[in-house]
Image (tube, rainbow, N blue to C red; front, top):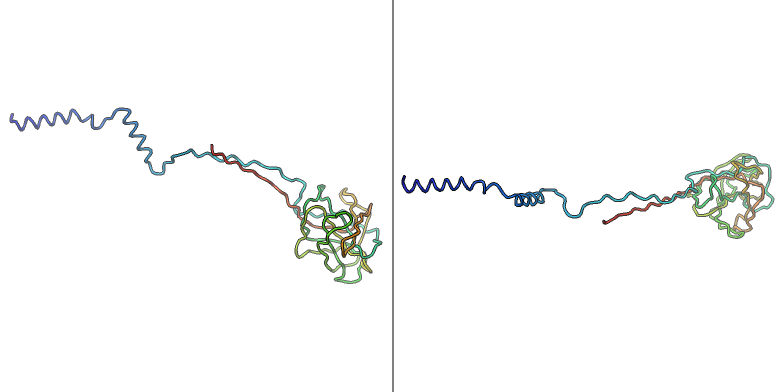
Length: 231
């Protein structure tokens, strides 16, 4: 055996003996390699764990308000006549569908005239909340009507406000709004009169409803609270 052949066989034997050491790693080293390799996987999430948000907590809903209702206190029968001229005869709207009026947006008004002297000369008015015997005039417009029949007026811009309100028709000359002693839906009597021009002299009329109704939107209020935890 030549010297060159001997060293070649020796190198080959050493290579075969050390091969397992090149490919096999101790358990601890292998685990560390796996751990580091997983940290480098594309799109792997890291850092603080993501926690789902707590469900929203439902707040208190104001059940006293209604959406888009018509309020009519009368039974549609006119059996009385007003007595004080230059007053607006109508109703104090403080309840609707069994609940108190807390806010409103009056879009239309319906009314009954027993007599009317002509067209475009019947004044319908809406007043805000009464303070003592006065109430602010929110609108007063001249509209057409038909004697002995109900008429409906749609306001160009809904009349909005908070609290109770008044709506009525000006009684003067030959323009006579209808009044009645009947009620509808067990809602009682809400008849009133007030000076149509300056909103003074507010007076409730016991046992009477004016044949005046409104369509209004009572906007419900819903509050929700959301909690976010950083734990």
